[in-house]
Image (cartoon, rainbow, N blue to C red):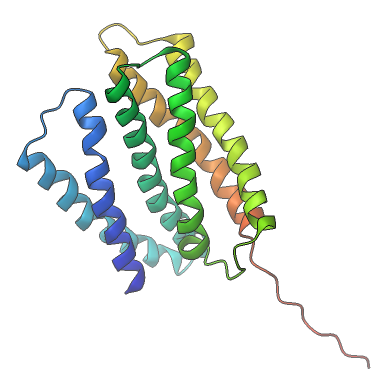
Length: 206
């Protein structure tokens, strides 16, 4: 039950955060928009987790990945929400300013990711320590580099295709960058940062 409550909270928060990029690219924010995003995601999140848990009975890693994906959705929307808040506030949607904003928004998302993944996704029992956080920071820094590089190349190198506004292209690029770094984050967090201790089987002398 705890998992379903937490994932509902994730869906609820994700729905509200999704309003920022929607506003940035020109969608009218109405009461129906809020209901579709907030209520819709609040119902969809626990339903998706239920399906993942069923599949996870056979492949445990799928349940972990499902939780990671839920947290990743929240982090993605937090990332893009902060990015859009900065773009809306300053009017900057490209150039070095965009790259700086992307770095800030990604780090905000990954800080949130640390706590959710440690205590919920991977259920790591080790106390928060400088050593663990340093490993997390190191792999997150690599993920940040992947994320920012991909987004910057798409926005500043390739540029917005014809018919797509710079603001919309900035958001598309941010999403592509997030998903590119997603697998790196999952594997490095699971295998290294939050790796579960393997019980040692005592040996006996015959």
